[in-house]
Image (cartoon, rainbow, N blue to C red; front, side):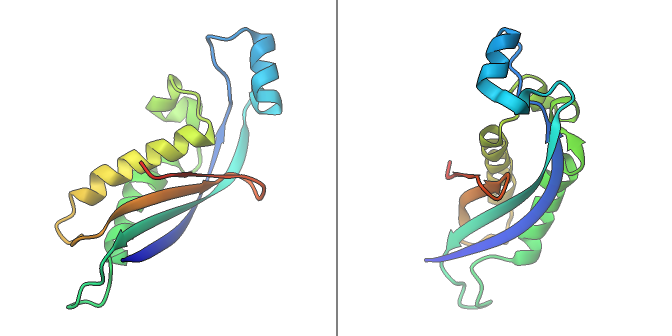
Length: 140
């Protein structure tokens, strides 16, 4: 089993706010991340594929195919957006990095599994770094 990890970057802003909570509770739960105008991050996304090395190509997964899916399904949808305002899902779901990480995993899994050239490789995990101090990983 070989693990292939590819790193990508995107910038997005968000506001952590649950409309079901009182303003004081939102401020307590989300702190400065509850700023009414939002705040931004330069996210680092790592996508890890797992699978055997194909004897014909010598690769576990086609990097160009992976790059294409990530570009189309994640970066084009999230880069330079305000997650709460520009991404349909996050109009009703609080765009914590945990939730963004799980959404990215779900989208990538769906699109990567449908690739005819994926061989036996599968999406293993997604890692999303929000700051130098914290990151989140999701394995499905």
